[in-house]
Image (cartoon, rainbow, N blue to C red):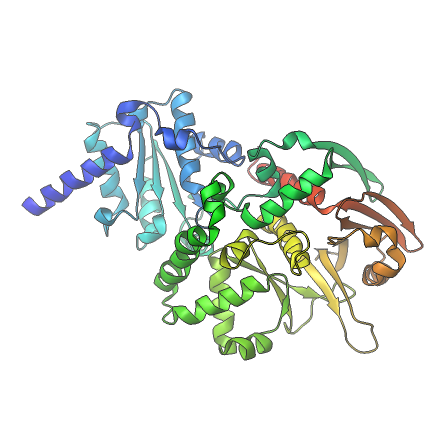
Length: 486
């Protein structure tokens, strides 16, 4: 009993340290001075809404700003009139909380506030919740029991959190995915939004919104910086970290995921093997792989490879993109696929920064474009064919329509102006794909050129790849707002 009382005093002391607004009426200046993610304007209304009795599960990879967004949400609640003493933050991975149930921590926090029996409305934030075994059962019980409390939980093992959320939290949890910074967010956080202006672009007979730049040279420099440093808010604003991004990313992101998160969640024993595989994928982000080729190059058995790739996707480090043929039909046997880093700056951290003339610039530009699409869970693939009497060909991004069993659109990602100057010789694969699928329109990116090219087989809309990435980033943000009815 004496030990329990001593432990309780320690926990209450820690809770007071972690909730400075109980006495200061505001979050710590360190967090208050940070730029908020643009996703905060979508996340906050979900937290504030008390009419729906659901917990919010904030998911995302490490260091993309989940904890900071929680603090900014807390500050906004206080600014909007919520009592600071009715807001509780608990970091579940704190060692002193080890194996303590969520309800016990909640009650100890109320005890620290002198509100043990209070029926007031509380907002309770559980950070890094995946470190509590059976957290989903605990949290569901809290939602069912405390009707006057809004619970929010965050975690870094996105897919595992979602799986458990779906299994145990049906009707009780709302999932919210926070991706790495999009290029749209990056430009806004760096205060360069003035470089962009909206412009209309024809799309299948309709005028749609796209963006152009008043200074494409400056925007391209920002785009290269984004590829090297842009995925993580801390790196964006720290010159010191940019001078040695490897130390920050390897220690705080990759090592913790590969050495701690994944082994603890999936029982991985050979972490060195997993680490070597991830390093190989990161170096060749955007390349086409096969399990047989990967197995030969890495020395890892094919079945183990499948599991490792699933784990890396669960940690939101990589994304596997399906392969379709020249008619956009998926191959029955998954022989080939592409693997992309979900965040291009991971490669820079592991190896070295690249410039606009680097030999891997094409793959990394493609990786950056896919990074804008991945958070939307869009039905996209790449087309690649080289079978029978067909000439070899590839199209970088294809939007699939399962109902029609046809592609809706196609995008060829280029970091060169050559196709704009000479589309007939530079875009043979795209021409073949459009003709075989009855597409009359496609987008082709460039370094700096924009405009239309009317070809015998259809219309090609050219736009700088940085403008395209910016546009897709904004559309991803809008799609997220629509998803949550905002």
